[in-house]
Length: 550
Image 1 (cartoon, rainbow, N blue to C red):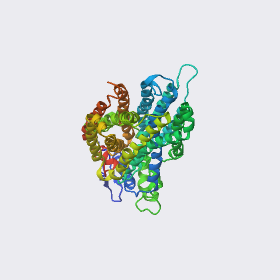
Image 2 (tube, one colour):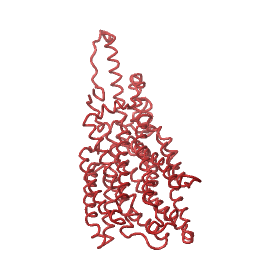
Image 3 (cartoon, rainbow, N blue to C red):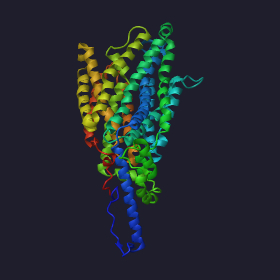
Image 4 (cartoon, rainbow, N blue to C red):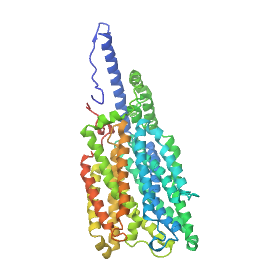
């Protein structure tokens, strides 16, 4: 059965005065077909208005509201990299030997991995609920969770009996991860469904680029907090307890700024049209977001009323809420399943390397001799500054080059370029690790920052964008959640594997082999990119694979 009803209306016999002749059932069929055609005409006109609208203030506002939330997500995810390092100087200051001033490996793994575990739950749950209940109803809920848990984590402490501060922090960050995970599908889908076809890639990439801003903001806040407490730290290194709490807690501030705007954002017209089947509300929302009184391209209420009045009765009661049975029916077809498989496996492969490296950048900086030595203050300052340098040289440029080129080069093209470049760079870094370090630390940093660049001008950005474009409206958020959750499963595997293997043969001795393993995962991502469609310049309806569906 075709996804869109045919525009052809069966001809009916008429008598001499124009009345239709035939059975009542024929008349009912004709009336229903006419109503369906009216509905289709409204839907096509409404979506055409949206897809071809001029880029305006509402689109900028959408990017800002979604982007500030994503800034908060990445700040909270990557701030723990520095906070865990600082906590070692506070809670293990009296440890002996190599354990002194160092958070134990197992604790470090679970503190960092707890957020990723929560993300998996949040991505599945919020992805499904945003399809079932609506984007608007879920947007803001995830941010409330993030704000509460960020503040709660920054005040974590050891209980009188039983739970240490690390266990309390683990619980807070697990729940925090649920909120962060929920933000992935909801922010991506809202931005995608509000965007114009021409600028959709740049809009979603802009939202995702705020991840880079969040990473660098966490490092800058840590440096400022370190500088503010320098005298106190030199006198008593336990004063670093304030530094990690301030660094973590300030992550809630941008979320508080964005919360009101998220709670008041309208439902996306695509969801209102395709799932809720509310034509009147959808056309009102389109006018209020991309239309204006002087824009002849946007249908007004008076223009649409003749069509709408004939279709309203037939559509307003037919809510198309998604069901798992319908989901199975759609994705049992290979042409649909291969796309979901492609978006999920490529994201999984990418995140093994992305989080394996970025959550452990401080360890890599230590391994190449870019940190350590001096007082606790100077050790932490050097490590934090190293993180900022890596982010500014590779991560930030990668995000923004993608923003400015993705609607010209295409998503699939950038993803292939990124995976190929990462395979080459990880092979060089892995197989020539010691030779490069012995000859030039600066050379190693250049290659490492190039890898950071091609992660973001490449699959780290495109694996976020493509799932927000390639699925039917009623499944779009669920599928993005599934794809993102597969990525976070890769992140958890990387986190566990990195710490289990990095000290094989000596402290940080296995890092070259881990980089080679990352290269292998990049090859897997490249191969599965074959199943991912190019979405550049196509409407979401063209990409949904619902036409001519049996």
